[in-house]
Image (cartoon, rainbow over all chains, first blue to last red):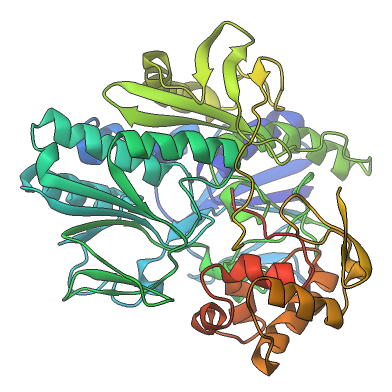
Length: 420
Length: 104
């Protein structure tokens, strides 16, 4: 009997067991998935919760509901992986031996990693929105806030859902406009990147959208500390940005057990081959979703597309055949832009987000890099698809590998800043 | 890829002037590249540059500022002092390495 152990029953881990159970004969293979709590959180909803779009109970369901028959769900905190002994030890002392291990424990915001952030002003004037608690307390603060200087801030890349802080800025602009108080709110977007986003064409489009909304951008800002008393962000090169309300995306890090097990990089991500997701150091360990170090967005769409291919590769691999379904880094993200509209971006390791129509060339119904109401309804509709199609591993009506069909290449007139 | 001549070296660079061939770099070239962006190299700069070169050879990727701190032992704050404003890009440029991945 071969044993597959999957660590993490979030978006990636749940899809992995749903895709692999039907492909691995139960007479030959046991599958176990480990998580530390019983609830599965619909993370894309956290962005919208602070603006009153969702109630907390709409975003949470029992994990067990999404784990198929024939897969053991083990609840417990992971202490460490002993990769030489092919064994996982849980904090309560239980040991789980494996023949193959899949690490899918994601990434988490770590406000403790920035001095001053999670101290006296935490959840008073300083908020995150990537946790249910953070999103709820922020909603309550926004409800009674009477205006001032709102700073939307990213500590360091990579972060989970890299467009979310931009979306937050767009949605905040619309939220205050709809409440008739936009003139009492100054919005500043503070980022370690040079511009609004990581890649040139999207950065230009999204930067233009910040301009249109009178959202100022403070780029190349690497935060050193937060001064909670003075309500100021201080950068490594001594710049200061004051705030009345700070909505920050803390440093994101992989799980601590990854570091304790000697399996992680500086941010606890597991180094893997970016096409097969196989560990670069252990021939029976894979890492998938946000937990790996692949140079792709940390996003559910990347997890989804990569799991589709991984499941086929895994079956080939365990039968000593070459893995023939290389992952291309495909990501596909809705970007909420406020007032019931949104954009869509679609890209991979080699091709940056471009404009056009998706998924059907010339038809859409979604527009790439351009605002439309349809894109917004796509985002809202995705919550249903997440629970009912994506997690159970049913087919989604979009292609797994990125396609250039229906996209327009754009000339880039701004290439480099001479200062470098 | 464009080819350019710097200090009588023929070198391959990308659109932004980052070297694309690891072996076309040497320490003399680093001095020239640093001067082009207004940086005079001191021992402290060399410590970072040599770390980046060695790390790239084993990892195949340009180290991030966080990695230069965690593995190379040079705090991010000091990297900003040595390579002002955009240390990640400037360090890579002088060390003759690909521009660090704009994290996606």
